[in-house]
Image 1 (cartoon, rainbow, N blue to C red):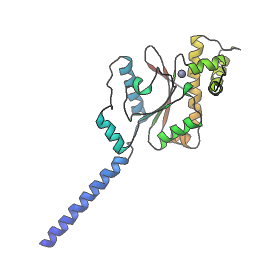
Image 2 (image 1 turned 90 degrees about the vertical axis):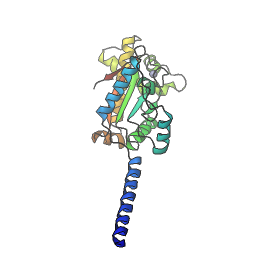
Image 3 (image 1 turned 90 degrees about the horizontal axis):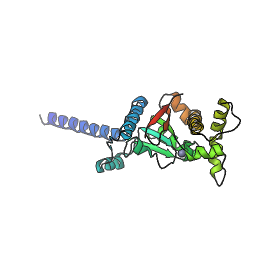
Image 4 (image 1 turned 45 degrees about the horizontal axis):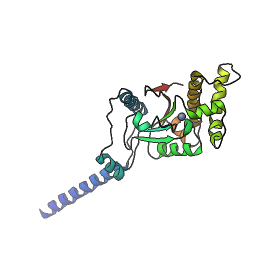
Length: 232
Ligand SMILES: [Zn+2]
């Protein structure tokens, strides 16, 4: 009789240890994300921001503690311009641990930017990457005007091909300073950057081919607060 109780006790103990290990494992595993669902989350968040129906999710003390203990698993990566008028967490109404944000003037993709995106996609499991350009971008202005003081020439060089593409598509010999031309260059620059990221070996190109990462383009309108999706 005693032997039976001992066997039951050992079985229960094993069961408990297994359950504990499973929970521990789940704690560190990145959730499986669907980029279409994550894109809808961004669209919904931007709609709340633009219509001023903000939810301010994931800003609680509990969320802070959870992220500190369990680590981060942001659902999207945003490569945006550094312009102070479009902080991604605000314009998409998201909170702590939701977005992995890489910001650089002109939302260009140099090696350090690509390395940051690789880290978020490969190690943190983010499944969606949005490259976000915007209206009245100073870096785009500098590229159109070919301003080269200080280190700005690095940005101008990165955006220059977008200026040339738009000029060629319009059959123009020179860039113009109209808002329409500016908007077209900003959008062309987003597409050029997306092309560079999609072709980036060995990590991003591989993740995209395996459908583990989706890349989309966006364009932010300053006054309305709306993000338009740019289609290929
Ligand atoms: Zn900008």
